[in-house]
Image (cartoon, rainbow over all chains, first blue to last red; front, side, top):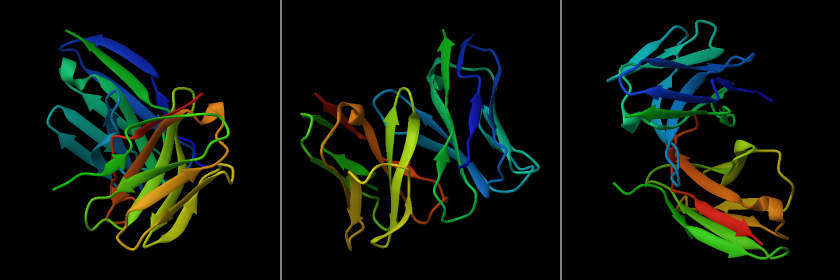
Length: 111
Length: 112
């Protein structure tokens, strides 16, 4: 069973600060996805990274897939209250295999 | 473009009863997956269906079952409900596995 450990588990910072969330595993993944979930709703896909070393930017969010395809990070610049939510990474060892979700990082941005 | 629709949104059942949850994926999406989300365990994979066939299965007891119809709509069934089955059940669809899932809003099941 592939395990995805996310850190930190909880993060509370002031509006305007920068932050990084990590997603680590001892297993190799064919791709990694990042989702954000708000209370009472399903997760919403933010990005999919498929190539080792790949970096993708989505406005103030920067996603990186590790060279060995075992880990990923999410960096948010100048955090805003709208960034508040549960951030989840997810991956599968091969296409067509089940998608495993990480333990999650609950982010709170304080205005 | 309609999203993933899950019904019902909320459900209260008694221990020992059975329940059926429904999921309508995005049109054209052939992969439908089900997840159970609880505060303590996070998102746990139940099963995935692709073109009416169960392709992957998680580590849940046989009380949890599912199926997919020819129009890609999916149902999951839980028999002999236990208090520990109380959770948010999420359905997600994708054109193919690992492309990136679109989730529904979930069904909040409470077992009393």
